[in-house]
Length: 132
Image 1 (cartoon, one colour):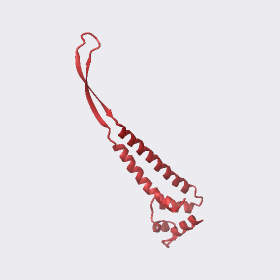
Image 2 (tube, one colour; image 1 turned 60 degrees about the horizontal axis):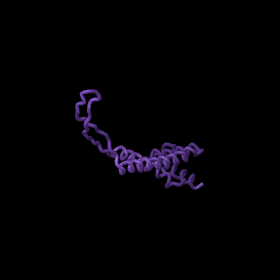
Image 3 (cartoon, rainbow, N blue to C red; image 1 turned 45 degrees about the vertical axis):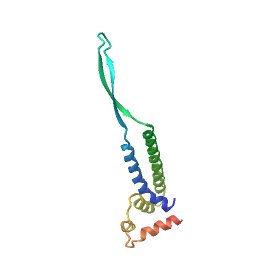
Image 4 (cartoon, one colour; image 1 turned 90 degrees about the horizontal axis):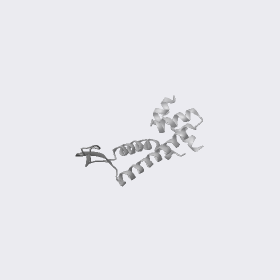
């Protein structure tokens, strides 16, 4: 896994939220109609009955399918990144990767949390780990 793939994590999270919003907002059309009905026993008097339902056209169904497929693809990519970070054996490196890519912390904040006054400390450890 390279740095570019890791940087996609937060964007994937935003994309999933956006796609889920779009999926929820896909409009299905409410349709209403009136039919003639009669009683099942004598006297068979006719009366009008209103019926209503949701109409999904082919476009709406294909759009929903496409959005669901994109959501699954993004979630798979996000899961790959999480599994990669989870698979890092060194707890300090796992902490650095989690805070940087999943939580979105700055290098300075991570370095300070690790107890270093050097603001580039975490970034240097990160880069060395990716090169090895």
